[in-house]
Image 1 (cartoon, one colour):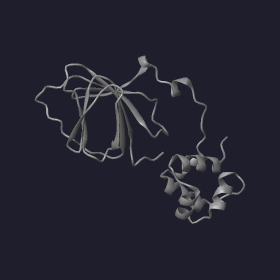
Image 2 (cartoon, helix red, strand yellow):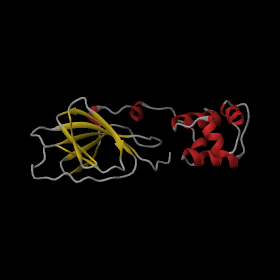
Image 3 (cartoon, helix red, strand yellow):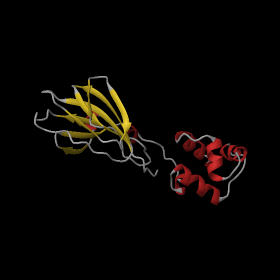
Image 4 (spheres, one colour):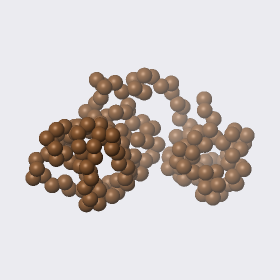
Length: 186
């Protein structure tokens, strides 16, 4: 079983906070926080509540047991990819197991050719996005600027920036899209 302090340290580092950052936000010394993370000292519940708020998780996150991971919870076989949705000219397939306690939402997007008359409307949403083109030529529109992405090309941008994708070729486009919501609560 992972110690409480170890869980805090792991999540703090994942979120990009230093001990000094955390110290300033929760009102505890860096030395005390370091000792807590190493299991040398304990911490009051009100300080753990403050830490959970800074890290953007519910306090119960620190008390949940991590279960042994089974293959079906860890690996998604190509023949087991779930179709999440079919929208416009895109088929979205999940590249991840159930999203419990996961931060990223990776998808395989298969996009059929668009009609030449179709206009690419941009839309913003929360979080950030990363795309990687596997096959075909993807048109990426970000802030009214269009970019042609070829196999092996990628892009990473805040999802709050107006953006969209299109396929103006006569061939299928396949790409990986990874979305990380900003209002995530683990």
